[in-house]
Structure formats: C-alpha cells, structure tokens
Amino acid sequence: GMRLTRVSVAVVTDADGDATAYTPALNGMVRSVRYIKPAEGGLDAGSNIDIVTDKGAVVVWDKDNLAASAVIYPMVPAHDNKGTLVAGSYAPIPVCDERIKITVANGGNAGAGTFEFLIEGVAL
Image 1: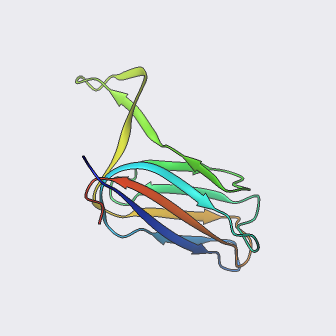
Image 2: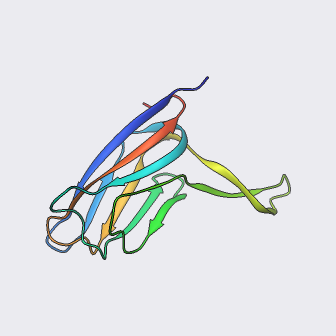
C-alpha cells in the first residue's frame, strides 16, 4: 500500500496580519489538512486562509474566519471523460513535484499557527 507522510508548516504573520509559507515539493494525494492553533498567540479569529497547489493553483482549502483548530479532508469536483462535472462526485487532489502554498490574511500581528498535511504517496 501507499504510505502517508505528515508535512508540517509553521506560519507567523507580519505586522499587517499576512503570511505566506510553502511545503517542500510533494508527490501524492492530499488526504487531510489540519490547522493547529497554539495555546497562546494563535492566528486571529478573523483569519482568512487560502491554501493552493503552487503550480496548478488547485484550491485545497479556502476558509474565512479560521478561529479554532480544525481538520478537513479536501477533494475537488470530479468530471467524466468528456470533461462534464459529475454531480455529487469528488476526486482527491494530486500534487506532483510541487509545493503547497499557504496564504494568511487578517491573522493579526505575529499570529502563529501550524498547518499539517497528510500526503498519500511518495511525498518527499
């Protein structure tokens, strides 16, 4: 079977409440994304996060007002072989020799947090 790799990225916002961070280049399927809020000094409750694959710009997690620790299992809408969306059908998000980009806005000055990805495949 395929192995899972855990990739953690710490973010700290600047004085404007913004941060940009990246995973290393990964290969596999994104199985989960977890935001871990520290006991003190975490991102502000009004934080807006955008997590996308760096090359393909596929949206992995787009969340406004990320106030507390959370985990998601992201997927994207699936298509048939004619390119038509299949209602109610979803597919995992692949990454191939690309980083995942994390952008934080409205995070407060020196807001911190960790984003943890579980990647299925040959991740690193």
